[in-house]
Length: 327
Image (cartoon, rainbow, N blue to C red; front, top):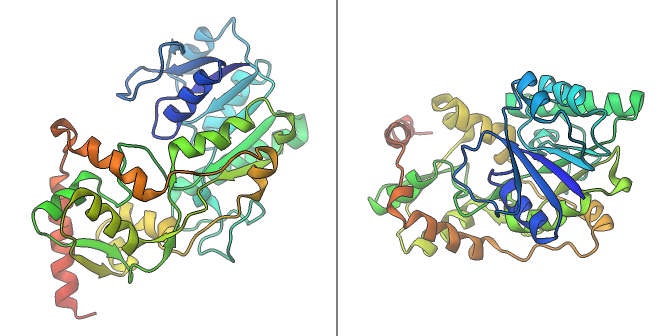
């Protein structure tokens, strides 16, 4: 297959790019070449900005693909531009949406692909919902060959699961408290990008997936207390947790609040039977206890130890104000 990834060097897409190469696919990556993540030299790089329609059109003028995957489309305008660019250039267009688009708070568990899309808390998720609705309309009206994929919280070696990245590990090193929302006992699903790729590759060039949506996640669930404990243990650090309500956090940090109220603040796990029905061999083998070891190795490299000083100070302030509030 001749495959185009728009992006292709992100947290999730790098693992998918490398698996495509391993499978012998003819992979092209259209991006600006700015990522530090590495993809095998077998990939063909097209240096262009997908947001610059003329640039992208010129770069792809003589190309056609069996599959086009857009990893960096976030709203209806982005996918409309893709439609105009690729409607005569591909047999399958895969939109990377988000499991955060599912109804929040969750209506029932486990979440299936038939769960309604509704998120009043997070503009990121709302943009993904708008894009999905647009694409399904042109599939129904014009048979544009779209497949929708909804990742949930997926990590690679560069992404600690806790909000704040290395800043959280640095707080542990300094003997500071780490904020976990609510009582820390809500259930969450973490998926390794390498495991995600094993399911995702089954969508590529599969005509049965046209007009369908799939999420791809681990079947393992952990509480946020578990996640923090596993992280600290892997790093060899002492963990001190302070539990703070999501609404209180949102009142101090809108981005963190959107992450919680629009996604991570609820019990969440998924029924993966649909992806397994088309990729029977798909299973997730990497537990977070295993994945975190690779993350800690990454953060042990000094150049990767980037502390967000502003966030660190905000966390201190939030903890103190919550203590004083007596809530």
